[in-house]
Length: 204
Image (cartoon, rainbow, N blue to C red; front, side, top):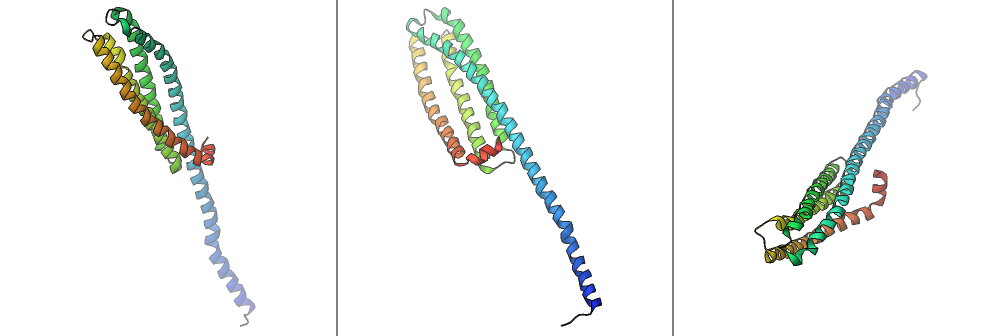
């Protein structure tokens, strides 16, 4: 079918009219895509901030843990002469409890920061990783709370040597159980990181 020039011009105008909404839609789609990217970058940045703060808290807890280890070793060395040497052990026991309390506070902070990171709008695998690390630090909090029972028992005037040795055995048994739990959490987190290396590189 042949069209007149006027008919062709009319069809051209109709086509142009139909195309205009698409022309308007394209910039809108681009803006939306950029907004999504901006939100994603913002959430990643927020998650990284929480992780950085959590890692800093863990480092502080590690330092406190090293100081505490020396105090706990001192208490262990005095078990043979307990309770006759209770007075001598009071200072390291009190210092150990103070260090443990500070380390617990730092690990609670680390657990909280990783939990906050897991609640940001990031990739599901990253969220799961952060959640597992948060749970791991929470287990370490429990670990330190159990350890604290040892110097606390040393300071308890009603605890004799037999009772203290039972307490030490109980503490060690409970810590061994917890160690298995936090080791599993760490292994699961490491497996996620290994399988999603590209996502973790992009999140930094």
